[in-house]
Length: 416
Image (cartoon, rainbow, N blue to C red; front, side, top):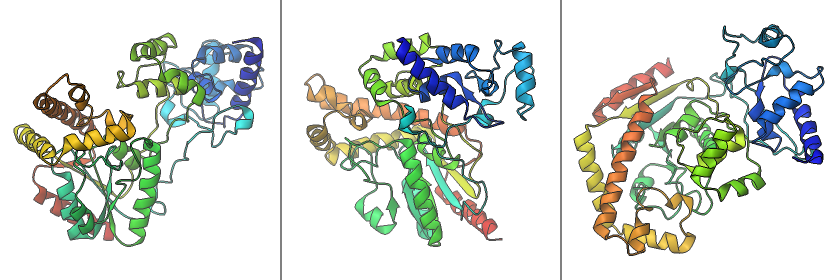
């Protein structure tokens, strides 16, 4: 950085550090990202070393929650100061980063920092969560939608779709979107809310889903959150607090870099690779945020999560039958129409659509395209099962009829 940019960056960093509340912390990478230089965590560390001792630098830690050996008195000195603020420090001089991390409520552009989309944690009480929430999860083609409709009819519910693709207009066949008759039978929400060229974020979904859940509860109905997009589900039931919006100029530069180049940049900046290290969007978000991930809270009160699990051979047959049905209903025409309208935008770079690229280019047959969709869908189902198995709050069932008894018991307890 030039001297002028470095001076401006230092001013922003010091202004942000001065705002960190007592008992809360930020990380070097987080501060760098919020101040417009996502790759400048080490520079923030240098600023800390030479900055005014009147600033609360004890409230700045590394991305693992580790204390600074360069703090006056070393890590022991850092430990004494930060523990005086009520923050517990482990034997290896680290704190619980998820418990104490702080995001600014609002940062104005006048300070040179990009505004965030952080939302303050919702109070974990019944005043906020006005009624019960039923969540239905499972692998693709497992029968979640049918189960949701059955339960909605029996218990007076409305369905909120937690699917990262049924939100898009025109993506009907390839996403196995609920039919028009099903949507007329039971009110469905968050379907067809945008177009493929105008994607929404998980944070956008969470915000809209929470408003809808509240509205359904206010009308005395049972909100039923249904889907296989684990991140969408978790953002609601664990009240995710999201990372800041990235710097648009930085994102534009990063968007033209290859996956390997993005990975190398993360390695050079000592930022952990995201779980999906082959996804350019995930890599860019890690660079922008300095490695800070979305933070979650305990499970939402008054929430029942039912997981539908079926035997692998049966699921394989159902997936093959579903893909065959998609082709018979005109999947090829749907994909061609969408691509002509929007091009190969990110929502179309997903299973059921992306496989047609080589077919349209004359490089593979229609049968090969169908086989790829089946293979990729089976692999996706395995990833879904792995994702949901991490959640110990899920009540797994193998037969839809089991869900009626479980939901009945759950709702009766809520009425006591």
